[in-house]
Image 1 (tube, rainbow, N blue to C red):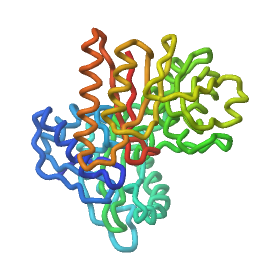
Image 2: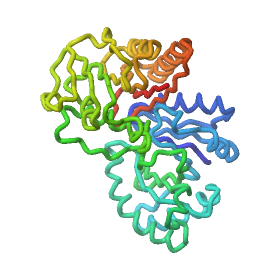
Image 3: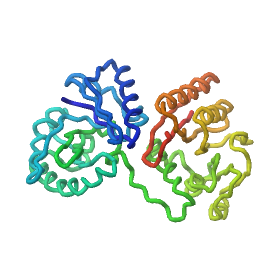
Image 4: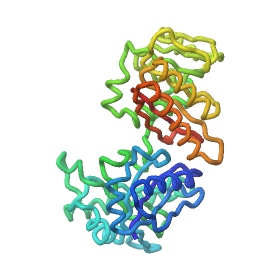
Length: 360
């Protein structure tokens, strides 16, 4: 049976399952069953062939909060315990994936695993199988080269165990460009904290390369609430953006030496700027409802043009809490007469939190 296959953060399977069921209900699609076993780092929703095709048109990765990657499983196969696993996968691609893809070729091949510690042991299978499978697919002319093939769907082989594989595809315009939805970012050696990677990933996910060039320009003005020691401020400084760092703690000395940072020892919830700023960012550890109310106030009073912030989710009803916060933010700001654009995603560098991007 065909299925939607979603990569998620380990421990958030039930939240992702609840969310995808909501989206299927809105699309008037009935799920045959949902696999969301705890700590597996994936959710699978089995669908009829007809509903699978409908879902492929209606379900959008950018609208899913807890999904890192959206794949369309055509089949799950058993592999031999030893011997030629590559041939089994190639046969499955021809028998199950090619007829389902809506295309006579693919743009790329990706072998991957769920993002768990135990699955990392399967990475050597992925590396060993990639070359022989690619070679055969090239001979079969299923992996054409050149810009003309860039729009074609990708082949995604998810190794669930050494003997089981999900034979899936991903649509280029409706999937993450990164394998398993995980961007490979390097921690800058001079950054004051690893939290800097959260904001960098958010820029990549929400803005993309074109958006980053347009929305992160020198001479802009940003405010970082709860800034210290400066992991998020660092991202602005690297781009030549003047930043007001609001925190009662100590800011990194190298950031202060840049001449781009103004450090204000004030309460992040009480501070308001004297002029409209280009960016507001916030990684304060506080209840999600308080953070969403704070951000709503900034947008309602037109203190900022765009914002990235985190909602910390220690509670059990994490998906419902996130929905409630986003709904409050949208209705509150829109009531002021302006339409707020909102996107939310649990990023790879997040932990028990969701990152939100808002803009007018």
